Image (cartoon, rainbow, N blue to C red; front, side, top):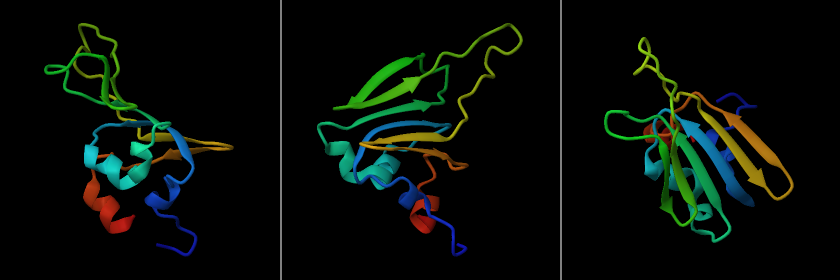
Amino acid sequence: FAEKDVDFLTLADPVGLEKVFLTSFGLDPEMLNIIFGDFLTRQTSELVMVNHYDRSRHSPGVTQMGNSIYNVYPPFATSTYRSQHGIQHAKLMLLKYQKRVRIIISSNNFDDIESIRENG
């Protein structure tokens, strides 16, 4: 890291965090624990994640995964030409704190645990 670089875990600081909206091409639930820790157990927390999914095994919709954790499989436009080619590939986090919002645009999918553990 250069002197001015900030690692990912510092950017995603869970202290004072109230709500999270994230999008990813893939997500490992363990990654949520690494990034957000105690935030996930607070009664007032809310996390919504939009994920890419295998349309042959899953359907679009919202699934509640925990107390206030929601997984969203978005609907994709279909046509005869591109019926199986739409993907959810953005890596975005919107973090709402009491008096501020942080936006993180990342190149990491939320299933790359080793990269986060090694580099923060």
